[in-house]
Image 1 (cartoon, rainbow, N blue to C red):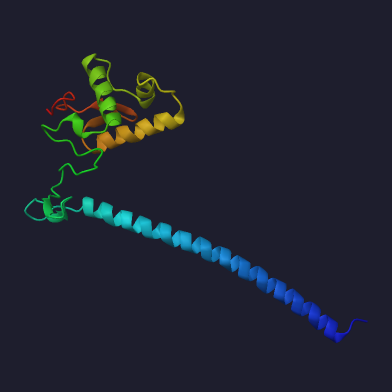
Image 2: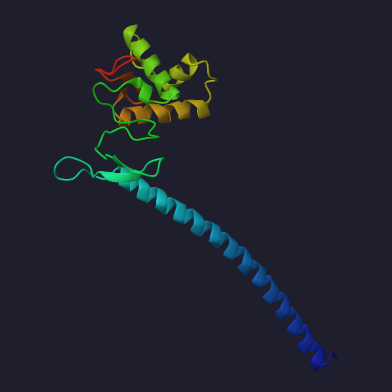
Amino acid sequence: MPSVVGLLEQRELAARRRADELREESDRIQAELAVAERDWEEWAIARSRVGEVLAPADKTGHGHDRAVPAADGQAEQTSSVPGAVKPKSQVPVWREQLAWSVLSVDYQRILRLLADRGRLGQGPATCQEMAAGFGMDVVPARVEALRSKAKRLVARGWAVESAPGRFTLVRGVSGPGGGS
């Protein structure tokens, strides 16, 4: 028959092992929590910045002007008027006299293809047709990337989705050199 002291030592050892296992699990969870909190903070900052960019204009129809430090340390005024082209903006909202040159090369290629199809009377283009026209492999990843860009052009007024998945250039948007 085992001694009482021996049984107590066995239970103490089992409890110590369980406490060590729980401490290790707690450390792992704390590390995951720190990463999740950091991610959450980054998304909260991103949401805040998007909210600033998309903030409605004031009652006069103008956005709020604010001073932004320039490279030389002096403040320069920037306008948050809706539709104004902001630095680093890939797809500004289209307006008359806005040149294609404000867009990145990928967006210009899509607009050029849509303009060519319109000029040749070929009608709206699908994303698969765009991928083939650009010499890309027509695989889901490439097609979805083009679809995302085409949808962004539609949302910003450069293109129209005449039927689901079929895109055309908006009337009034002309060639790469100038606006309407």
